[in-house]
Length: 227
Image 1 (spheres, rainbow, N blue to C red):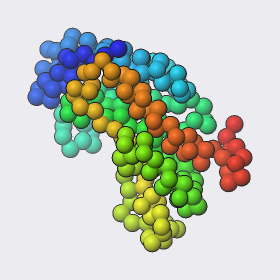
Image 2 (cartoon, rainbow, N blue to C red):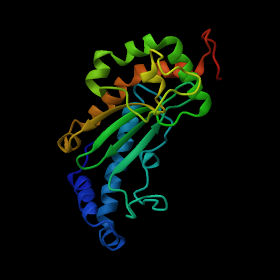
Image 3 (cartoon, rainbow, N blue to C red):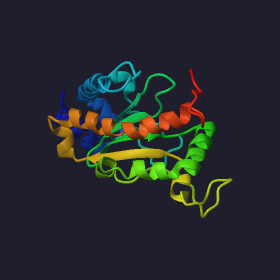
């Protein structure tokens, strides 16, 4: 399963003609490209379920709409200029999510925790406070560093409430999101190996997701917090 060249070229053309008249005149081209991406996402779900449990039912259901909500956007353009989708892990014990984005010059996969709720955030910070050496060790694993570099995500400008700004793990405590990110070139996206490379990239995130799942679903004694 490969990404068709025109699925990428369509986005380039859309970026140059981001208006309803052009889009409506190229609706068939959009539909063909969208189907290609949905087929890719179907194959991605199938491949991911060989090593993880994904509850997202179909590729089409995984995709975000191309139609943009301009109510709060600075740029009042009607269409997103990328394809993107997300995969949700199954059951309450498998935490974290996967995201892919296909965009000329800016394609990437991202995994982790995009918006922890207050309870999850508190539990994560408690674990960082107590076990920051484990966090540092996990995030410095050669495979993690080689594939994703540093932990990504939005951060607070200062220490979160209840934590000293001189805490030895302040570099972790300031995070509001906990993400691993890997970029692909346009050549990578159009390669016959792209699907397998995306699956392999997501699979390399698993040690981090598994650790975080344990943090969020067990107490300090290792007892389950969820059924």
